[in-house]
Structures are given as C-alpha cells and as structure tokens.
Length: 495
Image 1 (cartoon, rainbow, N blue to C red):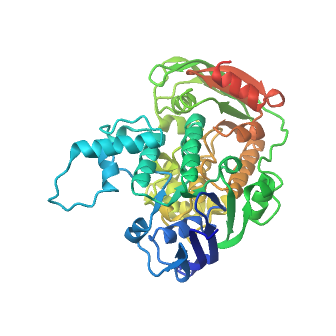
Image 2: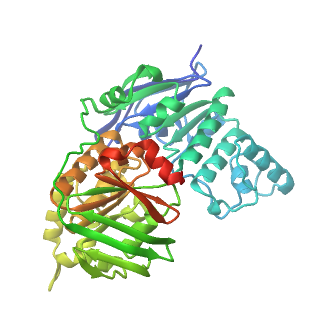
Image 3: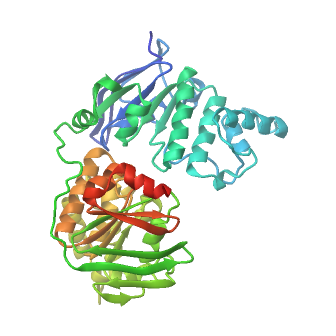
C-alpha cells in the first residue's frame, strides 16, 4: 500500500540550533501513528512543518505520491491536513456552530448566513463524534474534552484525511480519554490517518498501530507498536538505559510537619480532612476528577478560605489567609496549569525563578539584581534547565523546562512543605525521571511533600503513603506496600 504522507530528510534550525536533521515519517491511510520523543526532540517543529506553519530548511513532503512544492497553513487545510493541540483553538465567545462553520464556510463578507443549515450541519458533525453538545452553546463554557470533540467534528466536516493530535488526553479524565479513543478508532476505520503525540506512553499500546521515535531532531526508527514494550520505547527515546523512572527508596521519616485536623472549606467543597505529612515523606493524593484534590491544595495554600478545622505546622496551629502567608510559613504550591498559574511566559527565567522570593532580594537601594542572577543561575544548573540564557523568556522553553522553572521558583523559597499538583503532566519521560529524582532528593533533605497525580504508576511508584479522596474528603489511606492500582481505584469509585 502506498503511503498517504511521506516526510523525507527534513532539516530545520533556529539561530544556529539544529531542531531537525534528516527527519522522516511515513503515514498510511487508516492508521494511528504515534510520534514520541523527549521535549526538544523535534516533534513540535516537525508538526509545524507538516501543517505549513514553519518552512523547512531542506527536505521534501509527499502526499498521495505527489511532491508538495510549498505548504502553508491554508494549503495544508486544502490538502486535508488538520491539527488539534493540547489547548483547543476555539473562539470562546462564539457558539459551537459558529466555531465549526469558521473552518468550513468560505463565503465573503457580504454572504448571507443560513443559520438553520449551520446549526444542522454542526449537530450532524457532533453526532458523528458522539458529542452531546448543543450547537448554540458558547465554546468558552465547554470542558476541555468537549472542545476537543468540537475540533474533531470541524476536521471531519472539512474532510480532513490527516489528523494530528498533540497531547489530546493531558487534561482529560479516564472516561473522557476512553471516549476519545473510541472516536479515534472510528476515524481510523473510516480511513483517516492520525498522528498521535503523547508523553503518556502507557496509552500508545491501546491506540497506536505504529510509532516513530525522534531523538535530538533525528528519526531513530519506526516500529510496530506490538514490537516494543514500555522500557524499550523509553530507551529509544532517551538513548540510554533509564533504570529508574520512579527512583523511590526507603527513608527515615521525621516529625510531623503538616497536620490537617477536621480541615475543610465550604468554598472549595472539602470537609473533614484528616491528614499528616512527615518530614522526609511523600504522600500521594489520589482520586477521580472532581474528588477535591486540587481544591484541598488551594485551601492549604490560602487561595480559597479554610473555615473548618485546624492546620498545624510542626505542631503549631496556623491560619493561612492568602498565599503570602503560606509562603512565609514555608509552604510551596506548584499548580497543575503551569501556563496560567505556574509561570509568566513573557518574563525572563531569572524573574520567574525569583518571583516568590522578592522579599529576600529587597535592599534599601532597591532590588539586588546580582543576587537574583546568582539564584536563577543556581536553579538553572541544579534543575538542568536547557536555555541559552537566564534572561530568555520562559515561553521560548519546552514544556518540561517550563515546569522546571516553576519548580525552581518554589525551591528558591526553601519550603518545608511542598505541594505538587500533577508535577509531571505533559513532560517527556526523561524530564519526568529528573523531577522524580529531585522529589526524592528533597524528601531526603527533610521536606514534606504532598503530590497530586492522575497517573496511577506515578502514585504507586513515588508515594510512601497514598491518601484517596472522594466527594471532597479523604476516604482511606494506604501504606506503600498495601497500595495497588485496583485497590486505589476501587476506593476512589466508592466500591
């Protein structure tokens, strides 16, 4: 069978940095083709070239056996190539039907709109992807999963033959992920070719037919999915043996650092929380979406008011009214959404890292910029942040390096309690291992760590103890040796 898409010997460099070198990819109609690699391996650049957003320095793109001389976003759309990114590109103020129509209709400014036909078309396309969404709903009111389904519906309406999906499940629940996989399976059966990018390697065996591995801008190889196990795939991605993605080791625990006694917040919808985290301990917080895990973290950090029970730090009751007080008490909180709450993308790395430590940089003569540079340089080196300068804007970094900057900001405050909400979401396996190693190092130095994660292997692999939440409260706590995936999930489901 002839490939639908062939990408041959693609080269691309930015300011002397080689992003792609002799990269290649073959895609057949009716297949789901995974594209994997560490952050910075060249996945995003390759996708931008295929969709016409970036022009390559060399190489060729062939579609249906014909060379595509030049490609632009508009030309890619005409050729039937569509991309759906982790953050859907919908206009939030417009209705679902209007967003779908924007990708399909080509009338001029004076063209009359047949609103009834537009709604009917949207309803039919949404039904094809199994989305129970009213065409008149405002796009900004949809969940992340619903927005992705709208984009898939729009791509189907545009008769896209190649659909590129970049980290589509990063913000989805397990049930939403299963539904998305059903939709992808139906698209494959209809002859659509899907390029599927994900750092969640455990998903690939369930959805992908073949996988292409990129490393340092080069194509390492393409394999049938059943030919590789997870460890082999990791080895191909990082170019070395990765002996410990979860480098947990037994540690001697110290005194209680964080104690929650009948703790609750009516605003956050949590109540009767009883939990203790000791010095040197990593406590995993498990639960389904909506169980109250993030709400608990926000209440501890003072982002929402706690109005019930007691919070104690090293045995002393404290009342935290806002994040400033939390920081002063030695509490750090790395939020789930790094783009909105973790970093300020337009600001320099140095400013981001020291943002929570400004009091320490203040002097009678203003900011101590020399000390700021020293702190930033220290954490760039300690965390292995890949950047040409501490003054580079954070938005120029890969997702994994942005997460390291966000983590560095809190480490600079020298906290005694560290709350990590999905600390490795959306980062490659190499960066994930580095973050896990750092967590073990911090725990060994006496930090009390509360880790929220939706990845069961991460919870089981990194936690000394797992607390399971359901409906706004902790329903059980399991020691490491008694925690299994089945038991944690059963408790989260209330079984």
